[in-house]
Image (cartoon, rainbow, N blue to C red):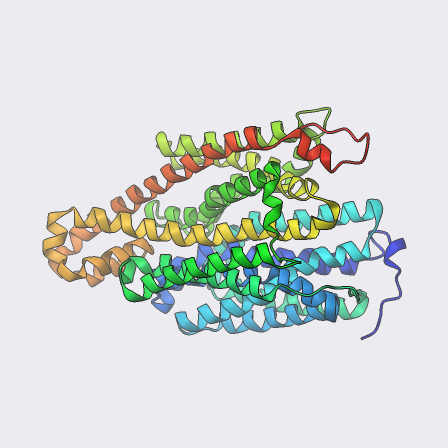
Length: 523
């Protein structure tokens, strides 16, 4: 490969713009492909006749894949070259986006998303590595600021991009759009991105990564399939048992090896543990609602895909602008880290409690609550990553960053499965408590509940006996709306829990322990 002639140590922001473009746009596509899919699920279901569990796998196959191999891909890149692995990841991502966009069955779409997720891990983790190698000093800070904004754009505009493409073209274009962008990024890599590697890279904790991935995948399978196969069925019970065994092995391995992929000893630091708990609680409240709210608006309020995406703008746009505000407020001469994070968590909690306890009758007013929770998450999003690495010894910062990313995205992946199972369970319980439906649908009640849970009311009505179609139509949306209100109640409780975690577990002495002598610190 041709080496770039630019010296990263002396390069300014504009002199190395191709590297920044590859890192920022690559990470943008990774996050975009998380948020863009939710808006298209009803269209995918109608086109491919996907079941409720298959729709969940379309999201989770991607999330599990890129979450579980992030650390492994980073280590492989240290050995074989970061540009080489980035190009490989981009090429695979582009090819799989084409395959997924042309998929003719849920199974091919799921396996395509799995491969797409594996390649996405390289694009996300190596974006950080490329920027770290290419920039120094103030230019590096600016580069990471642009990179963070790109990720925020992926989260903010994914639902809108998805909605417009679904309404004007087809759900297939949410994947096909990746192909030309990836081609440009590969060209930029070969043109001006410098190769780099780490000749002193240590051994990789393969057993830790494999057991973690196995536990995550097995538990997700059990939760997703439990609603349809039954929680006591052999496949589901076996998956739960396998998840428990592999998770126990994972903990044992990580406490035994010299260089663990996930250093569990870091959890002896209360502030580090508190930060990871807040990351999990934020993922299973704010971020998981970005998946289920578009479906709710399309189902209950009969919005188009693009209109449902626009409804989420107040949640997502603050992610682009509130990060710098949060950084200033976290400074020692302002609110401090603990004050900022507690306040941000409180905003998110207030918004979810409002929607759960007294949801506005006019759906557009929901945008006010969305804005409040968007501001709260935007204020703390960057500081959660910053504090998570600043409270550990400098030589463990890389491992701490990997743990933080894994906790965020792993909890997001599992919460999608759990919330989906709860949604189906709540709908099934409501339909089962309606004597008219029980008598008229018989064994078809489970199928009707499944169709309603995935938003296919036309399918639920048409699959019912003619004399029952009116009743299914009447109860369908009501059951979905009631089930979703229970999900909001759960997210409200979890959001409230984050407030005392921030107030009690973030400690000044943990932050001060890792500061240079004399550096100011304020928790």
